Image (cartoon, rainbow, N blue to C red; front, side, top):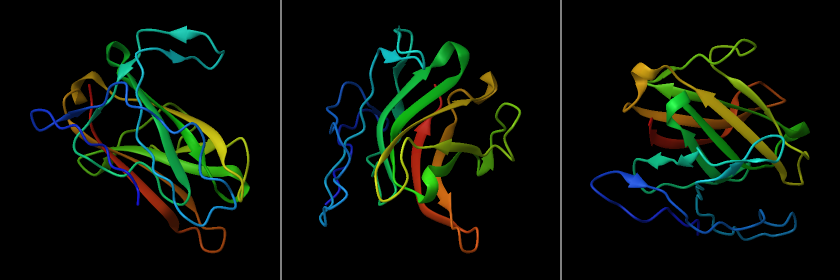
Length: 173
């Protein structure tokens, strides 16, 4: 059974320093392993250096952080710049997935090159293997304190429909 995030404080779950499973389930496993979301006050930049101004993410309530295609390992926020960074593993066709940030059920537009706020993410390996991915979201300062949903999914190669939708419910810092 999937493990849920468990500590609840004042109606909002602040995820700080939880342990994280170091690897996704093996490709041969038939049983699901559990996953606990981890946040870290220091997260590595894309170039591998540490950036200590990233801090723990805020999650609304206990929730699943993995499914058959996505495995969220770490969430960090940079409140001053209004950014969220999430890393994890994905197992999708041709190592391609999608993610978006929603506030009031409307996508928050990201930098140029996105379509309706959708960010295309690429894993380091395609299915059946688990590949690493990183995603970063930005949002306007006026949305700080709002409840939001971060979606992860992949589009079906057959008909383009969303598959294995995973939603993280958060409060934007």
